[in-house]
Length: 321
Image (cartoon, rainbow, N blue to C red):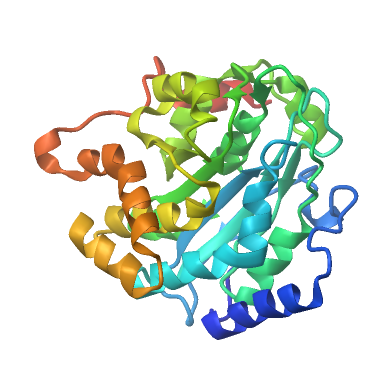
């Protein structure tokens, strides 16, 4: 997937029309049939004549009760900001896919999976097809590991296959992950058979083979719930924002810096300001990503964000029947 060209004007018009009409954005009252992961084969991010250097980017959005603000912000204001920043910073041919995450122990639609798209209309379609169930199990954990599993096992990126360039996986959330991917849940939700559960460390390692993986915590108050656990798993790929409204600017900044589309934080700040991000928010974005940007400095040394004990490829070969 991912054909067609992106138009910021068209995307802004969608948002403006939505705001003017005052209609409800997320009208799904159950998992959309096309986002149901049962029987899922592959979600593909492909090169094309329009996009010869495609770059797969996944937003895996927590849609439980405490996290519905980020999908709403994306659909009513911020998603055009993300695309506009990428393009103006010099990131060519981004292709976006949305996933929605709940709690597989209690929710009806704990995992929803869209397609990679390049046009404003289709990006908006998959985002707003998401069912904001607003559930969650109340245990302090949500099923983020399922999104990692889908990224590792059910996406195929030309940026990786053809150019050995990783895609990007941004998970938004404010809770802990479950300690393992449940083979029972994979069986019921995806329709695949695993012989055993997969430890969270192993599925993270598998996702890191083809993605730069980040966990975005929406604000400083909620970081207390889960930051420590996620830092043990992802190190400085955990991004603690000051406001959920910064999600798109933070994600675009991470991509632009990692792709070397902007040379440094000064160049990034200039790009953000030139594209309408007010000074206070520019400062907040830079504070949120400062730990990660230190990893991009060769003088800082290489730090592995995952400490898995075994190669993930061997795990998945052994667990699939």
